[in-house]
Image 1 (tube, rainbow, N blue to C red):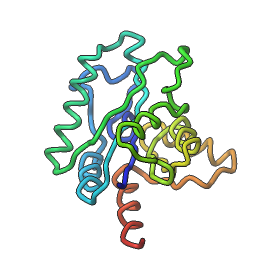
Image 2 (tube, rainbow, N blue to C red):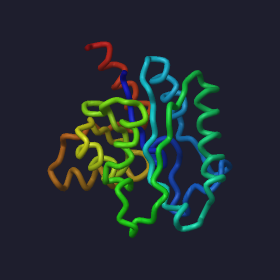
Image 3 (cartoon, one colour):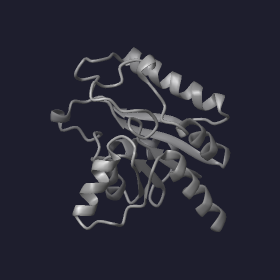
Length: 184
């Protein structure tokens, strides 16, 4: 089983400092939906691991989050793909839970749900938290420049950390993954 883990906000859809609170506010980044479909059609299980502290902050409800995720899944299905699972942390950053990235609780949940091991599989994100979670779990981190990606890229560069492959967006990252698959 091949799995790719994706962050949501800033990777699949435009991020917002005001949070994504409804399906109407969920605006896919150009090429992201078709990129997910391409992964799925190539035999990858696509799962999402996302921090959603807006729940704890009461900016949106579980039902609203479910509507957002249903909308996302329907877009991907319309493009010929499938999202196998969406795993989210509903906690406030101050709650010190085990599931808020950069901690690895969401990745542990994915392994338990799919009876698999994520070590060595790709984790695509736009933030340092995504990169740290991927590394802590022995996943292959990929950074995209969308969302908070440019800030994260600058931080990694200033830290002399050039080990994270970086792409303009999810579509380009997926093209890399699928191109690598052809060379395996």
